[in-house]
Length: 96
Image (cartoon, rainbow, N blue to C red):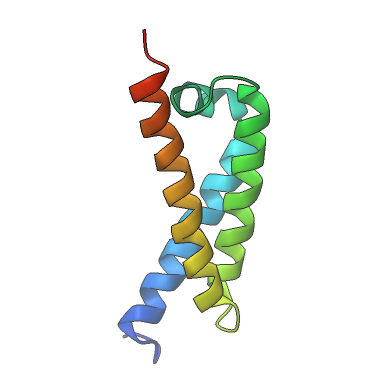
């Protein structure tokens, strides 16, 4: 039984829940995410973890609301593009 939800709505709810939980995990246990953030950012690693956790929590919550979902999906794509670009840039230009 699907509860009347479309496939895209179910995916949005799953993605929103996962992103929200990931963001909360960043805030609750930042040390677990420092190694990944260290690969993308050179300085202030803890600050980046906490900022990323806040962004992920906010985006995840916005994905859960049908009224904000479309804008949140676009913002999530931009956020992921920024993070991955930072990671690739740091790996290419800052590696010894």
